[in-house]
Length: 443
Image (cartoon, rainbow, N blue to C red; front, side, top):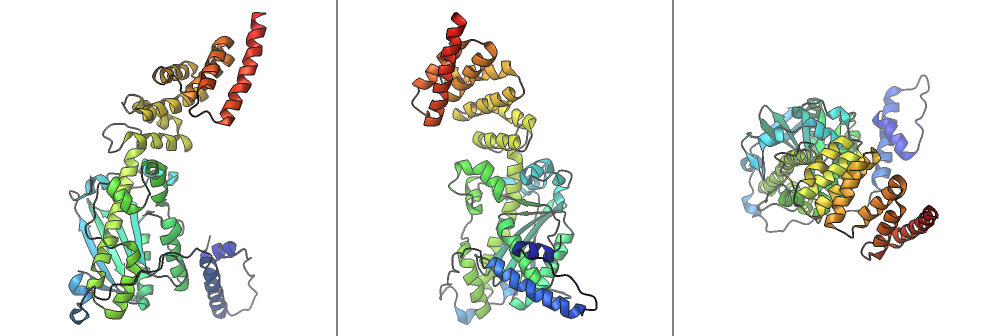
């Protein structure tokens, strides 16, 4: 589907029919002007974000300004659309980024990446086809006035992780920067971002439209790491910001990092003063973001592996991984992770794994295995409402032992913790039915 068609759908308009004999050049101009108006209308609906923070006046001495190339080792790249500043770097396979090495990142299992992205097309791809992308922008709220002045890219090349940062020294370099981005995208088979579906990709597509360029992201598979991070790690984190994941999951501590909300103001100060020192830590912030996405991809893929050996994770994350597999229609994979957890001394996580595994057996009609798990749970937690209720159902409907089922229901009703009104009502209804059935069975 073309960008034009997608924008017509977003705005609820039908595409105008072409009339014979029209001037295609003028038609194209009118179409692009209309598209810009529609994009502005769409982006204006987004909520306003945090305003760009002002740069401290005395951050650097203006009388001692330094050229960008003196501070950041890069080069001016020229193409058919102009020029921009590009910085390339490379990390060898032995280099560590927190708890993981580049070799760990490069060895990611693509079947697990496909599971994380909920996109089976990724399963047969090569990890070297990944393009990691992160942008630094002139504003955090989006809108057609927002520009991605720094586009950070990363990919695997041989055993190394290569990063490329495309910088707009001024706004008139945007066309050249987008051309470099398009060229990089054509060489890769899938995209990895962090919150890119909601922000980075949409912003870059908008900028392509404003620059009369085709959408370079059309049709490329996309893993947005924010969603699986929330699903697999959100249960134990205060938030799922990338910096939080770095510190609490990847064991990475940034030193002297510039806060993200200060970056737009730093760029506007660069435009005024042209002091390369203003951008040095912005480039480093962006580069670390890109490398962290590669590390986070490998870590999340490791969590959802079916093979329980040599995991770099915690039991609660494995439980979340099992649930993800179950929700994605993979009961066998989910079961293997849950069975591994049953052999671990992890308290409530083991009980949760037993509950989830018993439901898999119940759905498959493996009543002996399910019953054994419910009895195991009750041996450790005699007041467990889930096990009491499930075992009561089994005695009523399969063993036809109404007295045993009634005893289990009475035990559940005697519990006060976790017995909400809806569950109590269900148990009371079951007790009434069991009383009738047990009375009929004795007469």
